[in-house]
Image (cartoon, rainbow, N blue to C red; front, top):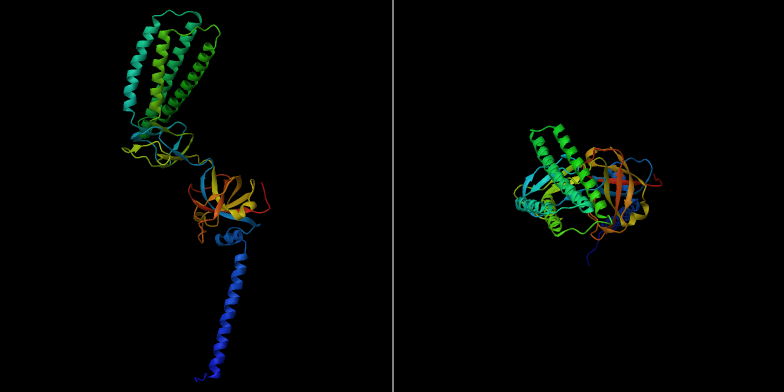
Length: 357
């Protein structure tokens, strides 16, 4: 039988005991570390100010306060012109992308000719009293509609020339005013027509008057079809991105936007708070926002909305990956002032405890 040296045996036992103690100590320290509040750990890792305490933390992305708008074509067709560029500051109604409208323009020419014939036929009939008032009101609305179309077309042309350096800002402002005046006039004429048509003594339209109404309806529909080949700024704001390319075919799918738009006058952060922290967040709660690009600089904000339902995580978090089955609650934080953060930038958000604005 092999004999073991007593000295070796003693050293082996001591080694086993030392390893066991080491495992026990590390496990205890690890346990204490995991018990440390998540928000406080995140604050320490990002170097956020230690003033006060944090109820929760989350990862978020910066976006315009009113959200980002993906601009989709209202009609399919070839893209003839991409006017907008990323970063352009635009006004409501400015033309950003123009699609091929040659078919609609050909139909418009034919429809206008048909309308002119119907006007001549109608005018051969003598109208008096209420019928004459209605005729005049209908003519006024038709004239006002064409004036709006002409003013919009002129504005688009002048805006294009301003970009090319062949027109001035004063001319552009004048064109904007002309369009606004034309739109106001159209609203007034439509209201006047509705008032006239509602008169109790108003006779039914004649056959020729009805034919003219149908012809004018065709013209209006074609003008609307032409307008659908234009992609315009929905409000004053900034073009955040442009995906449209000249020569490509635009489709009317939300999955194929032509441009991204937003108002950068104020910003917000869209955050995703883990389900376990949802009871710690409330509307009006103050928050601190940090971004790697700005080092130790901190930005402040306030919680403006909390989603009514949970959802799957969409924003990639920092640090260790979350399990795929973690559910989050979307929380919006409006940023104070006009911070120099960029839209799309990933940030860390720390929600203050025991404070509400």
